[in-house]
Amino acid sequence: MLIGAIVVALYGWLVIVAAGNALLMRRVRPGGTGPGLRPAVLIPARNEAPHIGSLVGSLVAQGARVYVFDDESDDGTGLLAAEAGATVIRASEPLPEGWTGKNRACHELAKVTAEDFAGDWLLFLDADVQVKAGFVDGVAGLIAARGSRVPVFSGFLRMLPGAGFEPVYLSWVPWVLLASNPFGLVARTGRGHNGFTNGQFVLWRAATYWEVRPHESLRSRVLEDVATGRLLAKHGIRIDVVDLAAVGSVRMYRTLREAIDGMSKNSVEIAGPGVGSWLLAFGFLVAGWAWTAAGPLWPWALGLLLASKFVTDRLVGQPIWTWPLMPITCTLAAFTVVRSWMLRRAGAATWKGRIVGR
Image (cartoon, rainbow, N blue to C red; front, side, top):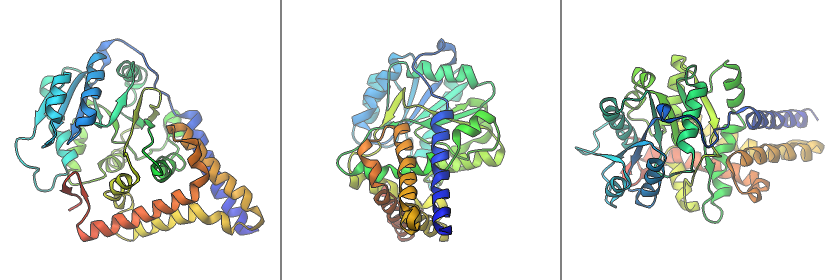
């Protein structure tokens, strides 16, 4: 019974954190203030032809100043971005040694806006994000409401599912974040630090960006957003993590295989390339299957595990049919961390034609 009670308590803590985020995270809504607080939108893009034109076009139609770094694309990404109204910056040389492509792109974008943009805020946005009408004014409204107290914002977009089994697999990502890190409580109280940013959406006060210089400081990091969050925590710079599901969405991967390959390129950096990754993988297995050791309390334990998944799925819009398969999701997460460790050790982790993590 003691083991069962411990398992139930641990699962109950996951539910409490997830429910706290659902209740306390600030929600960005369409609409907001006038153009004075609109940020420059900075988009790193490498072979993003299917997405870039619609994203830039929507942002420009909403009055945003958009800059795109065309990172040696060979599919016309830069041309499509320019046609849609973006200022396009192209790589003047191959990727320098010691830099990842995204860090180089974001750093170069920031340098251009330092000379070309008179506003006070910079929004780094991934090229596969889809924005709704009112997105830009919603972000401006967030700045108006909180920008005098908070210099950095990040958040969670609605996750559009890929084909087939992909959402069962990928839902471990929002779950492990939203059921373990009390983003809403930290934002509401101003106490503590989440040590996290989501690279799909990071909004910086420009002066703070140049104080920290994250993409230059972390130039070799593959999982630069997690590293940025930890860097901000080290410097004691506040982050508010917000709910962006009402104003934007993202389809990270189209298929299960693409999702596994994408997450395998960087999962090793969550806990480091040493024993930490193996402990993280073991932790996922424990999270997925500890309910089987709860004795007569196993229905409560399993129910709480599924409840934590259900809450985080609702926050990011994952399909409802995936939550009963949570033990499988956790097992796949453990597999991904181990695979990521093995690929990095062999120097075989690749993404968009580049070897990463060297």
